[in-house]
Length: 255
Image (cartoon, rainbow, N blue to C red):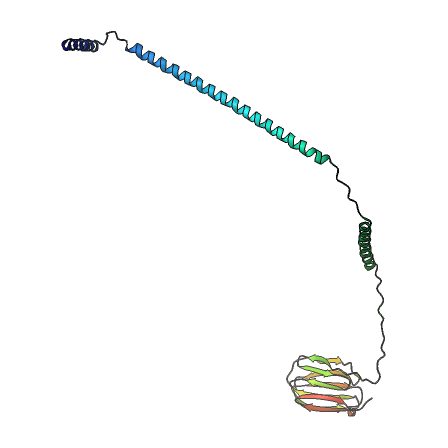
């Protein structure tokens, strides 16, 4: 038995070796491979068809589900409308007021109307308000009170100024007095100052009851200038004071 098995195995191996040695020997390998490929293609086609069928069925089921949902929602809306319709159609009951409540409402309306009317009238009155004329009271001046006689100031030249009123006149200058005298005939008081100045004669009118005019003349060669005060009366009616470098002419007698 063992010998028979070895013999058979030897014959099979020899056949296989002979087939490999002869490449042109006929074999069934090609047919087997072709059959295997065809079988695989069939399986793949079947799987593809199955997948497409499953997908189509799923889409139909989804469409059916969405349609069913829409129907369900429509039904719910209809039910809600049916429930609310009686309440909407029902008319509200009219409120009834008692006699006291009616009186209170009337009084309230009257007060509101009265307040509005007053406000309107107030605005109109403000627009047409008549301004009353103010009374003007005239007071006669008192004769027993003497008004002050204020001093007036005037600049004759940059270095000569005077301050005066109806009763006195003061000459302001930094130059020293060299001479003073009066002219009774011309009603003048004359004062000379030591200084070497270069200017032209200057004359000014004075608004005073005691002094009419003042003039300043230059005597350059003799190194002095002269101030002449024209009085409203005789020089004897005036007094000349010299203090702190200032000349003051004071009227002593009333005209």
